[in-house]
Image 1 (cartoon, rainbow, N blue to C red):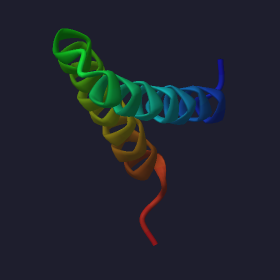
Image 2: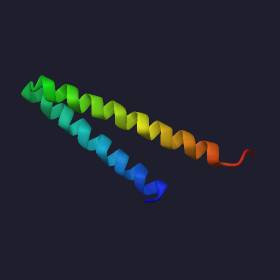
Image 3: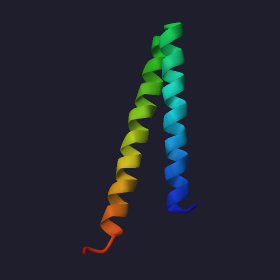
Image 4: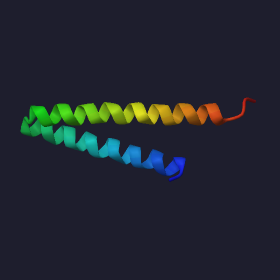
Amino acid sequence: MSDETLIWTRWLRLAVLAVLIVIALIQELWIILVVFAVLFVLTIVQLRQVYRSKNKQRPAQ
């Protein structure tokens, strides 16, 4: 997969997790909420790493 595809799939996963977190909050499913919150944070960390590596690949101007 290309970098762009990986980025879009991670953004999509982030959006889905955000919706699932809201549903878990409404339903008061605390254990599931914690699991989704951890996955949400891990996805954000992965996205930051991808963007950081993309910035390092750009030539300095």
